[in-house]
Image 1: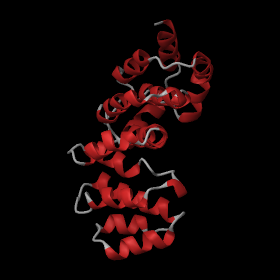
Image 2 (image 1 turned 90 degrees about the vertical axis):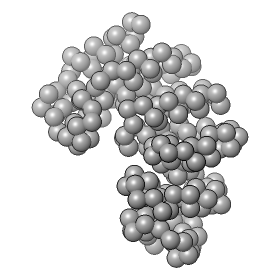
Image 3 (image 1 turned 90 degrees about the horizontal axis):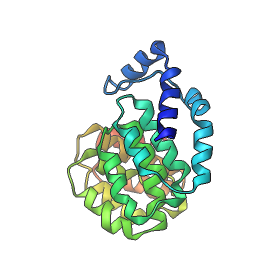
Image 4 (image 1 turned 180 degrees about the vertical axis):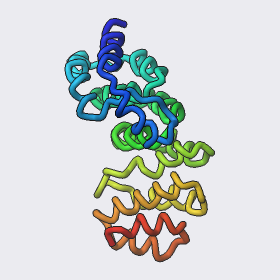
Length: 219
């Protein structure tokens, strides 16, 4: 695909080894990096993203090709591409979200996909909560579990507190850092909208210390 090759070459041509090393270290050396921080990526991909928006359709081959490349910036590019075209996501694309959440998983891509894509899809198509969110919550993949706790993160008044409570209480005994952290983050964010609910929830349910500390930050 010419467009794919073009943007890949643009990224490679502008790579910065001096920045790549600390960027990889920040991600615990889980991924190789080209050394392209967000402002530089925005500059390089700007025209491509504008063109993608005009096409009004998602090229999933492009997404998978980006996901297959070793350098992390290409996964960021794929996520930015999907966010640009998020309005064209359909319920059947939730299986693709699951694939993205469970391949090359780390908080940087998982959280963005969860909040900006999975969250939007579940608001538009509530049946996805029954079809996927509950299934993910009952599984063992920590990144899918994290996604179930965080997908309502930006819902504010639209947050379903009964659902949030149920999903948290499924995991409140977990000692997995990325799960306990997500519980605290979800409670902290919801406390901006419903501080009394969050305060009462923390006071009446057993939670890990990290979850309590994070969730209580604004109380």
